[in-house]
Length: 299
Image 1 (cartoon, rainbow, N blue to C red):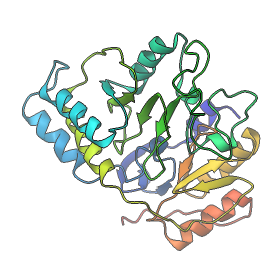
Image 2 (cartoon, rainbow, N blue to C red):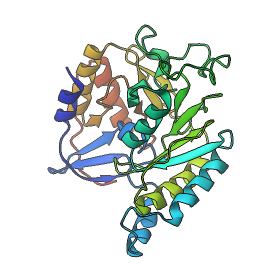
Image 3 (tube, rainbow, N blue to C red):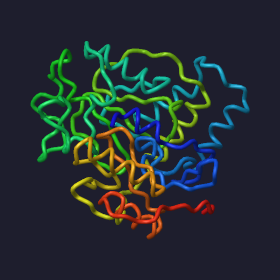
Image 4 (cartoon, one colour):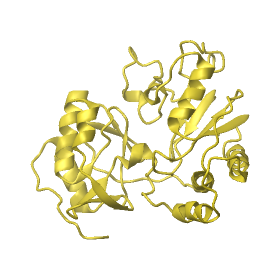
């Protein structure tokens, strides 16, 4: 089953709270998709909404240059001091286009090395694979990789996982859910200048950087179904085939659990999950029959 068909199966949601989503009937879904990890702290993490709202109230709506850009870049250099340069782009696709300009080839999100995905990827087809022994790029070729063909030194940085060693370019997935979130890029080499992002969302990005900088390692006890997912920190990394994953996605959704529809991207375990929800997840992933989660009660 294609990624598009899995996405089409997701119900229309009317609201979100923490790691829970609610559809128009009031049914609650445990969100393990978590917007590819951007909602790993929930859909309204901390005071993110307040920071965005305060900027809106100042009338800073248009994508003109603003003080928030400089604030984000200064914060990025404090949080990621191992990188010489930082740039911020209005969206993830804009950031990928900027990286493509430096590599001399088109770049998609799934081309990037992902510490929550690489160990399960197919080395025969994915230039971004890491080895099972070392999650970092090969230090002997990191900064000398051929930009025309090799993306192995372009990495994603995820909350709660170790940062890649000596990556030439990295895209932090900060706790800022939504396709409208600007994308920060940090690099060892100078990056192209992009368009301005809307100031309210830059204010949110600046707050997300502060949150990211204070995150402490976490351990989440989660049901282990090792034939389907490998757990790394809070991330659930698919190790099954795409066909088997589609069946797992369908069973999880029927049980009120949303996992990532974009195979082989990871899902995220949720510390808020109840024992009943963890049991429902284990049953759905392993293929056992269990009654669906139909509660609509707020938490």
